[in-house]
Length: 380
Image (tube, rainbow, N blue to C red; front, top):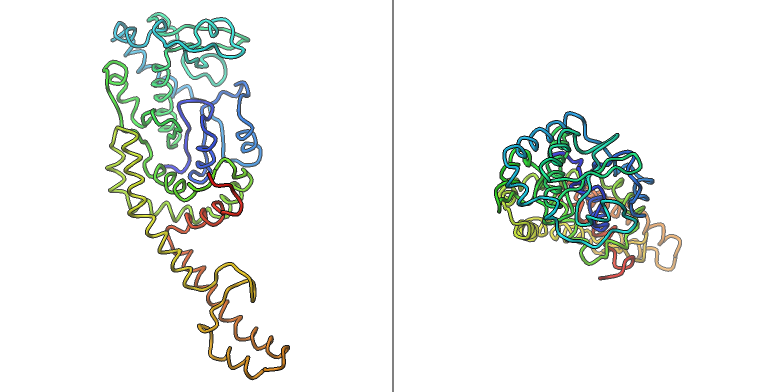
């Protein structure tokens, strides 16, 4: 699967914590957002967009809109009465009025409004007319823009199908921060069942590999309140550890058979529980072993010679002899210590660096040491 994701079904991120974790999981995350959309992003999203290329916006192509519109139009024509029973505008759930809403939006606060006119539209005009005729939509024209109001369940399926079309055409991986939204992959092929067959479900997770990476990173960071980690720190971390993330993705690829079984699970809670179980039994033991191996090199952070804790008994025998020979001569002793300890420390550092570079879980170790520091962030 692609390492570049498309966020769906909404245009605005629902969880800033999820977005920060996504920075440690994906190379980039896009979203379907018209170029003329009103700026309602959070300060975090604005900061991230200003300081990095992690987020990007894209608009559906006419080909993608036509593909989705054609399939929806056929289903509306075949099952209009059944669709009205489930998704009519009149049957939409009640909701409190939205601030600053006016016109039909104020009268129907329970609807989901989809941009359907002008540059970057998310629906063809032909489908819009079909939905209005079938009593599945109402239209509001305001400030030169056309928006169509839909039953929220119907809108969610439509936007998920649109994400399916866009991700397939643009070679992206669909991703969401809403646990109750089914995988976008293959939605277009199952629209009939989703719209007309009650109780139809789909696998909960679209890209199970990256869902696993996300869970593994979250498990390492769990003691830390991710909301308190500055965006700039996350951006710098991404740049420093890109190669280690690529190696960790290969490790996740080695779990393909087990993850594929989890990817077929339809219940999102059960699917994520299984992913956590795989992490505890497969990846976490490797991370713990890497920690123990690095600890064995005796080069822990601390005070002393070169700012390192060095096991002198493990260094060359000349170290102790050098001290004895230079008794009473501090300058000579210091020179002897440097000549004997420096190569020892250099060798241990090189071996330690090699171990980290060869480890498939070194990325998680970096997350733990660089971002989950007890001294930098408050505990939950």
